[in-house]
Image 1 (spheres, helix red, strand yellow):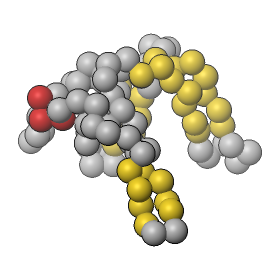
Image 2 (cartoon, helix red, strand yellow):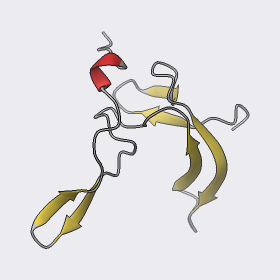
Image 3 (cartoon, helix red, strand yellow):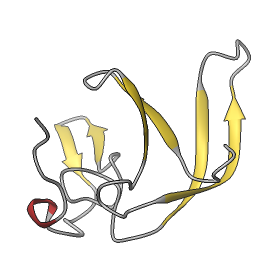
Image 4 (tube, helix red, strand yellow):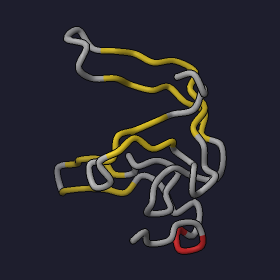
Length: 88
């Protein structure tokens, strides 16, 4: 919170990471909401850069649940191959 940028916990890395530290696609925090049990948070952010999702979409929430199944609600915003590299 001190940096003003979104920080997340990665289960695969087992560590905290700042969004955008490898891609440059930083999320500037405007507001943090917590639930009634204080065990879930929502970040309200300004997305800096073309997108946040490793799939190339602007948001990780690019699919909606419909009667016929999942529907994509966004197009690809950037080429993830040019932004993300496999980490050992």
